[in-house]
Image 1 (cartoon, one colour):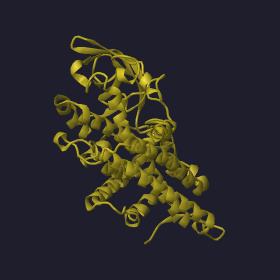
Image 2 (cartoon, rainbow, N blue to C red):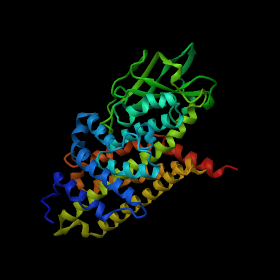
Image 3 (tube, one colour):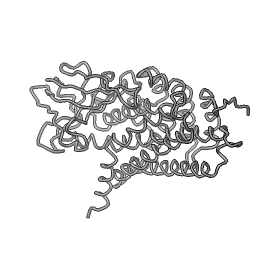
Image 4 (cartoon, rainbow, N blue to C red):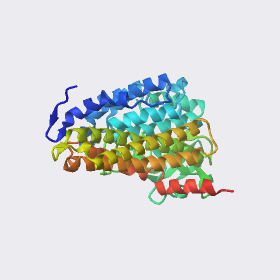
Length: 406
């Protein structure tokens, strides 16, 4: 094997080729079916060929890669958990964790948006009536249209059940007023799943609505400048006497908080998997870099500190993967402790994932801090994962509540 190098170690332009041809040979999950291994390989090849070469420019240009995501959707990644009756792939949560890990290796930010889109599509498939499914799901699965999840407000973050956005029924319409903050895809998406209050205070008074971008009374704030996740817009969704047909109520009145939380069980798994994919990518890059980088007359990978650091990083990756797959299985089988397991996996994988990315940057030395190398982008993109889909402190609260209940 001939590898072109620079004095720094592996040339950034060659890093992808170096490990993309060897990654799945040296690491192929045991316990996966032949079909899952094929799925894993397909997602990996797509990510390395379509996402990875473009990710740096997409990040710097703050570009929402619509065509690349539609290409991903053509492989079945736009409606991973949606029934094939409506154009989806009908796959399991375990299957999804395999796919999203590989995609996140290519571009974590873009993959994170794809997981949010998939969460919305699943919510429509799970709670929508036949008319809603027929109307929205085919276009979402092909990603001809994009979807956004709208729960958070300025005064309702971790305390989501205190949301103030209100929906009042008038004839055959609901009139929505309020604002949703930090909405991924806002302004670009055509479909918004919006949680709004139709009844009493607290969780039981919340309902979920399917709101289209073209509805009267919906508008969007500025695209927020962010540390990472630059390949997806983040805006406030503004509802000013927004007119929503009554037929666009998802589920029943008062069911919205349940819809939102069930969506988040899967969303937490997916965002943990995005952290895992980014961390696996950074580990591969760091491992290969330390083999090529020489100091004091030998490769820095030969120093015991580097050996031990790589061993610890690899252990974090394996344990994260095991927790995520176990939680995915719990969701697939509707296990009684599925919500706790999803919280546990999300908390652990996002925290270990960030640590692995950070250690990979450290192993690159000063070069890891340069935008010429991809490590810093992965680090920026995974930082938010311990905050969204429920902060990790909330995940601890969920776990403790389950562990201590009578």
